[in-house]
Image (tube, rainbow, N blue to C red; front, side, top):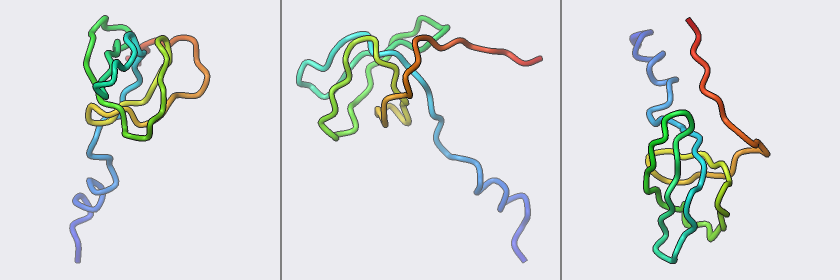
Length: 83
């Protein structure tokens, strides 16, 4: 019989999905700079290879340093802490 806790852990995604805002456009290198909301941190991430164009100001989903897709139309992201 399989370990129930191990089965539960298999349900949890192994990668973290992050929402970020594009701050610099792709200059042909396949990389863009994004800002993580609420932190002011800037990261270089890669495009997913789909030839999609992500204009500055667009919010995107990032998984493991690669842009996965645009977010639905949102104008801002706020960080909420539940205590």
